[in-house]
Image (cartoon, rainbow, N blue to C red):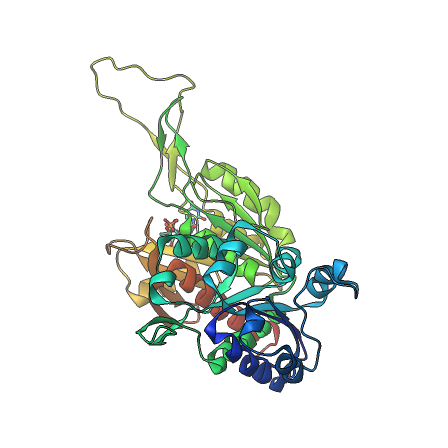
Length: 403
Ligand code: PMT
């Protein structure tokens, strides 16, 4: 599978550094042009010459040297299609998370616009240390891909999680990401996320338990694949994914207005938001005071944004809806996908504890109006988002290719 992409291979100080040579060899076998940048500590684990033989290029490590090192980080950053750091040490992960740029590799990491992939390697206790896990979480939220370490024998001689993934597995992940970024590069994705709040009076509202995690995970996955992402977000406490354009809205009607305005300039639209089906007919501008009597509130139906978008859909656009269900009957789901006019419906059972609203995990089933039903299984929302995007792209591409 020749890809002829420019892969920048960062190597940091770890006993596993020598395995980066194998990674370089395998990536070159796939037709990639591999350029290695090693930290000073990495070069204590293998001679620079080995890196040069395995990549066919000089191995750089200094930010400042007499051969034009001063702008080298920009040149290397600009020309790369993917930056892989394998192995990524605990020290390097911390640096990357806080944006420290005190050597060539960490400086390049701040200058690249291509996807960044890290393959950590360290002792198990270090990997699971809350500081490292928090740094990894920060990096994931910025769209950095992690190839998690595997279980095996570690430098200390102990068995545990922390061993660099096999070069073969790293090659597969890189292949996948390069293919994916080819498929997604420049694609404009519009995602709705979070709840809507329908005002009752000046201080009260009708809302729901959506946290926005599912929609934001989709946005982060699409960004890390090279897509251009717009989020239309109800109120959430989540950080804005770096690189996304975000419109903050509160009510279903505000969401409808923003989605309808943005929809024509996007290729793919995913409605992950939990839109309130009803709003208060006449919300009061003032705070209603207690007066010892009951309070009857009259609700009126909100527009169905998704069904409205499906009527506006142009050839080439692809529309994905979610379904929050308590009954996952396939024929009901297929019927709903047809009624909503979507290309794909991603259904989740919101009556099950631990998944759906607010939780970090979900269990999605992909359904199409043609009757396909594909369980994606239970996983973190982040992983499911990646799987869902891969499945969406595959089906969308076959529509484009007419197959
Ligand atoms: O945000 P999280 O805490 O991560 O939770 C994720 C989630 C449970 C909210 C998400 O996975 C999900 O199921 N989102 C859709 C929730 C929903 O409104 O489902 P529904 O079956 O009521 O609606 C079906 C589809 O129509 C959805 O794509 C919805 O966005 C859309 N809709 C619904 C009502 C409405 N008035 N307009 C719409 O466009």
